[in-house]
Length: 72
Image 1 (tube, rainbow, N blue to C red):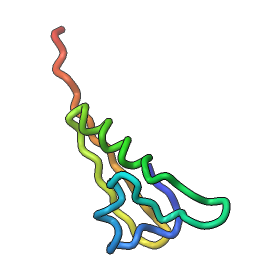
Image 2: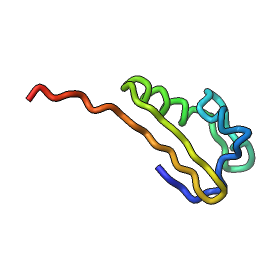
Image 3: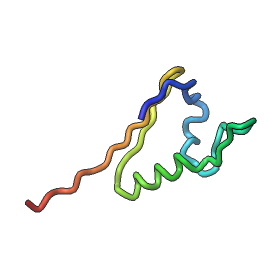
């Protein structure tokens, strides 16, 4: 998943998967800080991996899920 937003500052990147962590606190834009926590738990439940790279103007989340071996 990729976007062209402001990016995620490096000093908070380690916290983005923590429950209740959000940078949205003012006005009509607010968050509960659960979205990325839920995604990470789902990915973990499938023995997958999630990673993030970010810079101003571009953030990329990559999700890798294992493919089960087929019995065919």
